[in-house]
Image (tube, rainbow, N blue to C red):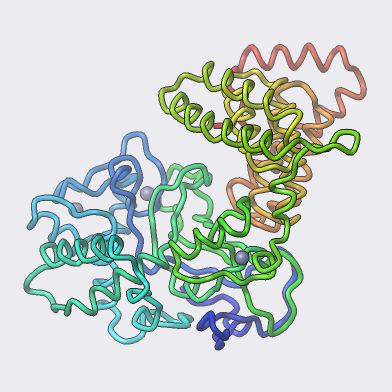
Length: 479
Ligand SMILES: [Zn+2]
Ligand SMILES: [Zn+2]
Ligand SMILES: [Zn+2]
C-alpha cells in the first residue's frame, strides 16, 4: 500500500538512534500519520489451523489447502486472494513434507515477495529491507544460535531451483525479523495470532512516552463473505498534537514497568539503551513503587519487601491456577494478596495493579460483577495516574471496567466509563475499528438504559433482571 499522506513524513538521521521518521506538517490527536499493509506476514505455528492465513480472522471451521494441507482459509475467496502469496510456499511445504516454524516461513515469504517485485517493493515505501537494522553484532551467543538454526532450516526449506542467498544475507533477513517483526492480533484485538513485517513502521523509533500509537485495523470483518475482508494493515495514529518536524515515536514495550526494567527489556529485545525523558528521569517510578502512608507513617522497608515478594509468588500460583481453569482458586489467591497489600502498598504500586487486573477479569468471567466492578474501578484509577491520557491500554481498561459496571447494574458509572473509553479509542483506534464500533453501540445502549433508569428505577431493574436471565453472556463479555 502506498503512504496515504506521503508528504507528511520523512526519514531523517535521529542521532545515536540511527534513522527515524518525522512529520513535515502539524498533526492532531487521532490523525492517521500513515497506514501500511504488511509486506509479509504469517500465522503463528500454534494457531495455523484456527486462523485464516489470508485475513487473520479466527475461524471455527476453516477451509484447508488441499495441496499442502497446512494453510487454512475462511473460504475459497480468502484462499483465492492468498494464492499469489502462498503459491511458492505451498510447493515448498509439499516438497519438504512439513511446514517450518513461523520465523522461517516469514523469512521465505519476505524473500519471495522481494523477488516478485524486484527493485522497488512498493510505492510509498520509505526504505527497503536491505537497509533495515539487523543488530546481529549485538546479539547474545544464545540468540545467535537460534538465528543460525533458522538460517539452516531456511536452506532446507527454500527451493533449490530458486535464486540462492548467502549465509550473511540470510542472517541479515532473520536479524531484521528478530527486532522489527510486529505481533498481529485478531480482528477484535483480543489475541495475538501472527507476526508481520511493516517496513515503514520499522523506521519509527521507540519512546516510553510516545507521540503515536500503532494499531492493526483489518477493516470491517463482520461480513461473513470473505470478499469483504480487507488486507492486513496497520495505522500509525497521533496521540496528541505533534508539531512540524517532530520525531514520530511509538512504545515497543508496556510502560507499566519501572524505568530500569523497561531499559533492560528494550536492551534484551531491541538492542538499544533507552535514554528517553521518562527513563532518564525515572519519571513515574516513584508512583509505580509507592507505599501507603498513614498518619505520616510509612511501612518499613522489610514490610514492603515481604509483601512484594509474597505477590510475586502469588502471581505465579495465580497464573498456574488460571491455566488449569481453576478460577475459584484464582479469586481466593487474589483476595489473599490484596488483603496483604492493603495497608502497605499505594494504589499505583505495580504489584497491586497486576493483582487487581486479574481479579477483575476473572470475577467478571465468573459473572460476579459487583466485586469485579470495584476492582476494575481501582485499576482504572491507578492506570490513569501512570499511562498518558490517550493511551490504548488506559482506553481498553476503561472500556472493560465500564462494561463490568454496566453488567453489575451500575448504569451511571458504566455509561460514564464507556463514554470515556470511547473518547480515547476514537484517537487510538479510530472510528472505523471494530472495537470502536462495538463501543459505540454500547454507548447508545447504555445511554438508553440510563434514561430509563432516571425515569423509573424499578422498571429499569426489572428490565435488567429479565435481560440478564435471557442472555447470561452479554454482548460485551470480558475474556
Ligand atoms: Zn479469511
Ligand atoms: Zn497450500
Ligand atoms: Zn525509555
